[in-house]
Amino acid sequence: MNLKVARPRPCPRARGVRVAFALVLTLAAAGCGSSSSNSSSSSQSSAGGGGSAASSSTAVSHTVAAYDGPEANLPTTYPTPTVKPGTKFSVAYLCPNAGVASLQAQSHAIEAETKKLGGSFVEFNTLAGPQAQATDFQDALTKGVNAIVVQPEEAASLAPLVKQAAAKHVAVIAASTPTAANQPNLPGYATDPIQGVDLQAYQIAAELAKADPGASFAALGTSLPFASTQYLTAREIYWGKKLGLKYLGRVNMAGATPAQASAAEQAILARYPTTQAVLAWYDVAAEAAVSANRASQKSNIKVYGYGGDAAAIDLVRSGQLAGDSLTQESTFGTQEAIAAYDEVTKQHLPLPAKVLVAPLAVTKANAASVKGW
Image (cartoon, rainbow, N blue to C red; front, side, top):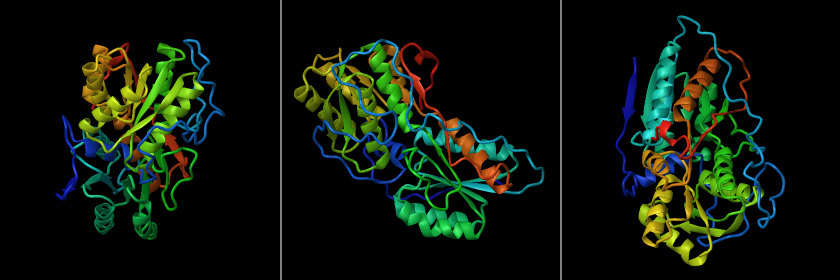
């Protein structure tokens, strides 16, 4: 029996063309970290991967160095399980926000693969932060599921429940948590499939380095204190420097709305008038930056997005957005379900600590064949 449980709860939303805060949850559900200063910064974390940055004054050829970051040697799939007919099991997915298209795709893929393997599926739609997520986790345990897939919004809030799950022999799959591949898995979680935030940062910087070797760039970040969003921007800066691009600085938008992104982009134009490119922390910010540049008669500045929403892919097709990196949500969901089944049926254990579901670099050359979220 397929159950879908959704509890309407107050959800802080900031909406332009789409729900901006919900997209923040999509990108940042890996947990909270320290927000960076709301001003530009020339010193950013380079957590793992590939040694020191290259000189920003040294141009590179159109062939850039291959990716050698912390996600480089991870397996890309879980072992294919042998289906055991008659095995009864259920998988719960604690969805951060079912109104977000990319998360819907992930949820549908978990459901489809779970049913293919002979199980049932329960979705919980968590809309209001760590406390609500903990409530949904408890409800999933009460319903007697065999596996739970979750992106912990706050690991500490779930820690006692993860222990309860272990006592009940319920497998817990952490979705992209922690963000960095060189960080150890959270205690009690069976495995951590990740969507490759570092590889996405590399893809974005590499596309700029191939299109315009040695170009100057600024980072359009956010002051929101989510670990994954801060990690992405830091790694975009790291990879940009390593690939020979000239890093000028960073400006953070105050939150996640298009208006805040537009204001941040205008600050970039004023602060760094020689910038040739802007690397944005997610697609709505990139889309707003394109509009701000056009209004300022700076349409020649290359803007790169992150995430792969439909509007961003359309802008890549038209050449207004220089590039993007698409998260493979459906493949990600399928792998999460396989990990759950392997755990429930005791196959291929122990599973790899982390599995990388590689993102897709999107440029004008391939955008026509890419469907955004």
